[in-house]
Amino acid sequence: MDTGIKVGDIMTRNFIYVSEDTNLYDCAKIMVRKRVGSLMVKDEDSLKGILTEKDIIWAVVKKTKKCLKDILVKDIMKRKVITIKPSADITEAMDRFKKKKIRRLPVVEQGKLIGLITEKDVLKIDPGLFQMIAETIKIREETEKLKRKGMSSKRVEGICEECGEYAILLKDDGQMICEDCYNGR
Image (cartoon, rainbow, N blue to C red; front, side):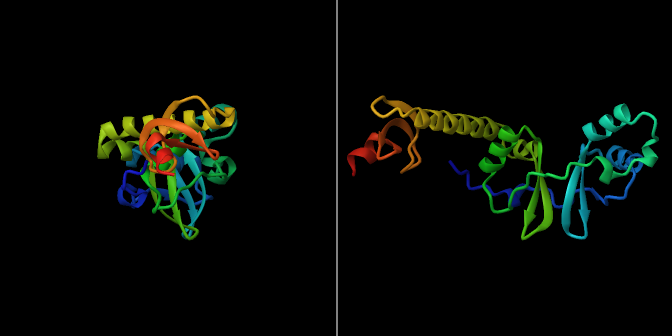
C-alpha cells in the first residue's frame, strides 16, 4: 500500500557529511555540535559510506591504544550502505528500516547523494502513519509466508495482489486475491 508520500518529499537535504580522511575526534565534535547520530561519507557527490555513533564507540573500545585523532573515517566506516531513491514511497523506506534493522537511509539519485531519510523523519509527518505502515509491512510478510507454504484452498487475510485492498484472500493462479477480484475473472 503506497501512501503517496515520496522519500524526496520528506528527506533531509542539508545532511551532515565528512570526507574519508577526517579523523574520528573531529567527527565526534561535529556530531555533538550538529546533534546528529551519523555522518555521510562522500567524495564530491558520491556516497562512500556512513559513520554512526556506534562506529565511534566501537573504535574507542577496540582501538584503545590509538587516539581518536589518529583513526580516520575510512578505517571504520560502513562501506556497504543501503540506499533509497527519492521517488520511492515512504512505505518502501519503512520496509527497509525494518528488514535491514537500520534507522537511516541515504537518498541517492543517478549515483549522487542528495539527501537522508530517517525513521524520525517519517514520524514527524504523522505518528499514526508509522503504525499503519508497520501493519502493512507485517500483513505483506504474512501473505508472503502463506504463499510460500502453498495455502491454496484455505482462506487467509491480507492485501489483494490485484486491487491492493485488505480482505480475505483466495489463491488463484499463484496469486493471492480477494473474493471480488476472484469472482470478476
